[in-house]
Length: 460
Image (cartoon, rainbow, N blue to C red; front, side):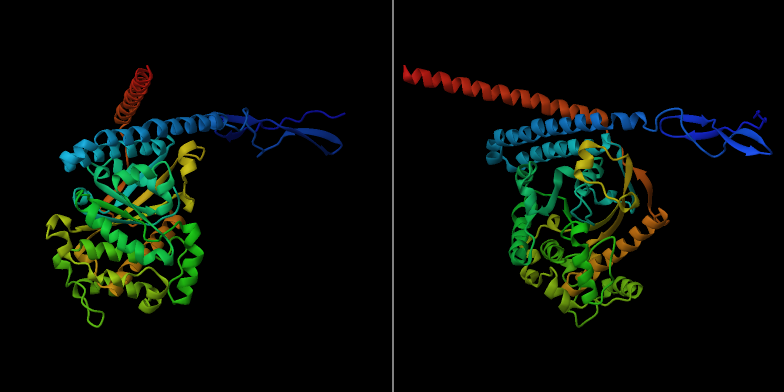
């Protein structure tokens, strides 16, 4: 007959989101004719289900968030459009006041988008160069493009900085025009660029015209461009084939950029002092030579200009643009180029649905800043191509090291800083849009009632 042989009690600690529990298991085994009962080690279990409270409420929370975001779009976007319509007489009287008000409302609208990611727990962390000097200056922003969450997270970063979002111009794919925010972008006079080789030259000419007719007269400051021309997952294979064909580095975390749009921008907004920075390709460029040589040596790469002009978005037709088109206004010149490297945890980007429903676990997205003065950027086509390619080679190295070790270069002027949002300001902005929606609805009802009364009066 078996009997118990005392053994030390082993408590195995189990830590989960649900709580902490201990296991006490018994197992029989025979030894010397006796049945021994003992407590087994190293078998963790929990005293609660392994689904935490967060997991339990995840789906109801996602549904509620989706409803709130849809409602947010319903009472914010139309309100913005109605106010801009009601203020059209002011545009005739004093256009600068009209667009100043428009910029404020546009900023408040994008602040709502910033709230979506912030309330879902998706923080933005900034590091790199100090960019405060560029806040009120004409600045071209270049960023790698991984997913639909890039723009909302950039909005969240810019929302916390004074004066950027009211005076920003986004360059985006033409398909975005047909979304709910497309009408807002049309009023704000963002630029929609058409992709594809057939539309290339026409789009670049339209971009130059848009800069002269909208960006400069409205006194916009920042202009955001994604040089890759599409999401990483869509362009990666094509980019790697192009790189192999032209003996360029094969990139995995970014794609080779398209140069045409940046070439058009630099030609239209370059200062007079920039005109002679980059002489013809047959001579050397003193201002940019060190940087170009340094990057070329680090990558052991010489870009084949003919291949790039054939297969990528270069824009030699932009050469006819000149500073004279800006009417000699110094304020029309580009002063800085801000290179932003966007990095997601473990290389797994968020997307817009994640930001809306918030079902993905909270995480941090990193923005690494590198600020260049416009005089550092060459104007000549081949040199500009090399310069932009070098920036994306640097991005590749930064992202590869970050995904491998989770670290960034130690020589950052600004250490890692989490972007904080003002919840009270969010509340006040929502109250404004909700109140405006109520007022606009009352005006519409009054107009309908007045129309009905006039109709009955005319019939009588």
